[in-house]
Image 1: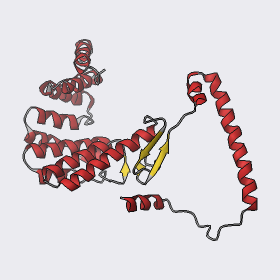
Image 2: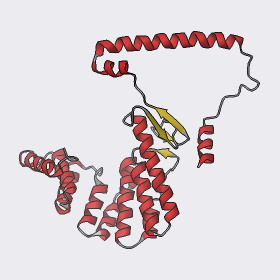
Image 3: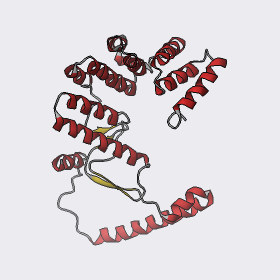
Image 4: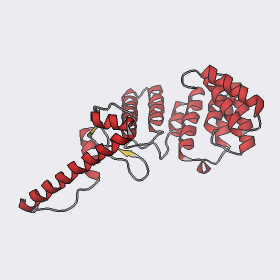
Length: 263
């Protein structure tokens, strides 16, 4: 609801707070919806109440940004520096870096704003959930510094990361997604960067099977049968083929190297 009608979501949150004002998640929701409608003073009050109730610093980036919203970038920086960042989760740490960078921009300090974004998570060759926002923030600072070419490159990387994450989540175009630079998800949950095309096509039978659980069994049976036929064909072909001259395994880094050359 907050994305479609933040004002209505805020009214619901306020109503909930009147009957459950001592529940941390309720105060947190009031704060988030207040921030969404631009009531930064209320957002700050509710965020501090939430932190006092729960002892959590997970909403610290929103506190910093709300301080910026009420015109206190200096206070925003103080809030951000008051917490040991190593105790924060990685997504919160990244969001905090973005908020702190924004406060530096508010103070007319673009060079220091860029330094705030020099964190290990700003890896242009890997895409996490926070990467698009982080890359875009860096692009904005570089543009402020007059480094347009670098800004355009980081904005391009932000677009690539967003497309890669959408493709990995299966929410992009079902026909064919052409992503300039994308590879597989690694064990850390990142999407690596390399050239590639990700097919997301679903047959009509598979789409019908999503709606009909009984049909799903038939679809999977057909897929298994096709896979078995493919295995038999592959075994026959392998028996006739001569062994390759070099059977060393392909390095995972090859895809990334190809992507770098393409760029």
